Length: 390
Image 1 (cartoon, rainbow, N blue to C red):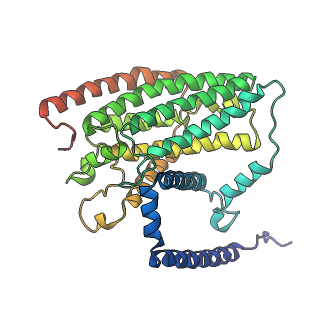
Image 2 (image 1 turned 180 degrees about the horizontal axis):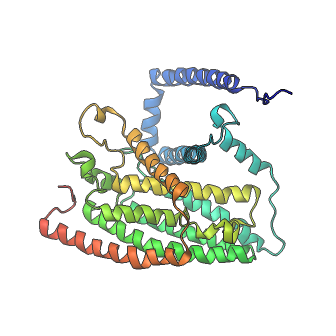
Image 3 (image 1 turned 90 degrees about the horizontal axis):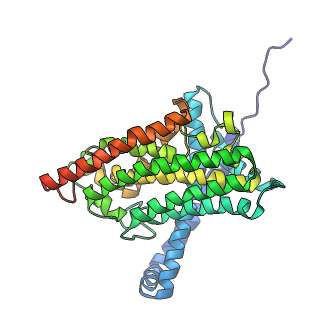
């Protein structure tokens, strides 16, 4: 009797060859088109038209918004694969490795599965609110990216009250969860919606005070100006994570609660509420709810990078580090925060609800209030003004 175990044929090399060949052809085609447009002066003429005419400006804003939308959607696919690989490493297993080379097509397979399934609406549900809830959630999640500067001048809407807009949009996200829980006409989603409302309001108070301290240090509500205020000769030691270290920690932990991530995922605790406010959703409607959570994680990570980690700034303000494009530094910082989110989920046990509320109201709120007073006093008596790093 043979003891040999059956093996699956290795198709990774075939997939890799097909993808590599297609990518090479696409790159050559795109380079040729871009060279033709640049050489003929079409790019320069198009740029002038898009900045000088009203119609061109409107078209430019639309294209920038679409580019940001596509990049965020692709980032959610990367996030799914990245998190599963991280958790696989923590658990000493492989993670996704079947669909495509090294399993990189797994998120797209999940997407296809959700799309072809039949969405089922419970008979007792409020159909209008049931369908509207995921749309409200996903639109608000994407809307926050309009004011995130990924590089110097690379922002869809560089408004002067960007941080207030971002805080308002992220706070409105709770309405999508409440609508989903109430419209499902089921006890588990309703309990989840009530938990979510209390949880998000509790931790938004602390996040608000954290933002106040950053605004006092930067002297501006504009996110790009907040990044520029951290541009000092001290490099990464001049970023706000160091002088505002307690607020940095509070912001990170509150971001976990704001996005319903472990150990604060009481709104969708599977041992108690099955899937929480999403329990009655299926197919593409569930996909929108899941997409909202992923986009919120990326948004809070980007906010952390902008407010505390210097945004697009180089950690060492001298060559060759300053030769690296700012968007590379921004992405490295954002995905480092995402990695911390994933690691927290991997090894931190879930809190009880009373522990969650106690942490928000009895620990974070007093500390953040004290830090607001302390930072204001330090800025006033030292004369540091708009830059805490001097």
